[in-house]
Image (cartoon, rainbow, N blue to C red; front, side, top):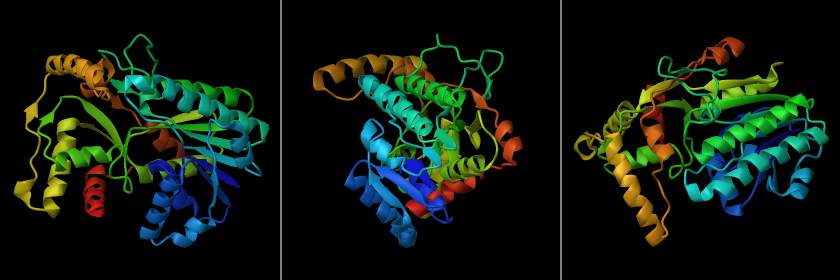
Length: 338
């Protein structure tokens, strides 16, 4: 049997959609009935409701060991997709608990249940750092822990350490490090917020870049890696490194092609790094006075001006993998979101 954690998230949903086409039994854990109903609705929209019903859904939490142990009954393969994504400094403890402690629990249950193989969904934020003379990042790039990083980045790196611990204790593992993942089904979360912000008339951009990838590619790579004999390896999943300006322009063009072109404006004002630093100070004071979430930290500002690129030759050579053209994918995704 296959077990999927985080089955009600973007990666988990699309993974289950693909796995449900195969013959092996699947169990997925969920935390709330509301999230489960949302995924059920998504399966129905894809005309896959019979496949949804084939999945054994179990209410459990990766931080609740008794419920997690029940989920591992008769399980041979585990896809660990559950994670907390937050860039709010106030969520430091939650990130540690959900991502590091939760992953440690998943790994321990794999070891005690004689699971054959674990696939962990990490992030490019857990990778090493580029240097002034080499901005290209690969799986072996050294991580400089003196660089300012978000709590999310630190938690994903710590999560990977738990997976490597499991590997050294005899568990077969593979780790995927996707960039910003685009996919349908969750229009108010994650990468979909880029699309929503452009639709609402975002006017500003920064000069940094980011790695992006289609959720279809992430899921395809995970399944193929799990079916392979590869173990003890991590793989970068980035279809394209793209500037924020280019990404926003492509989104605006795709939105305009399905609405009225003069209603969708491309961001046209560049924001300098020093300007964001000033805004960060005001936002910090505002968050204290009005108990609001912080959006800007030194780590997030650095990310908005990051120019690192990602070398994906390892995944391409390991399983003869080719990425989807993100220009075409984004256009189709926005059309589907209509």
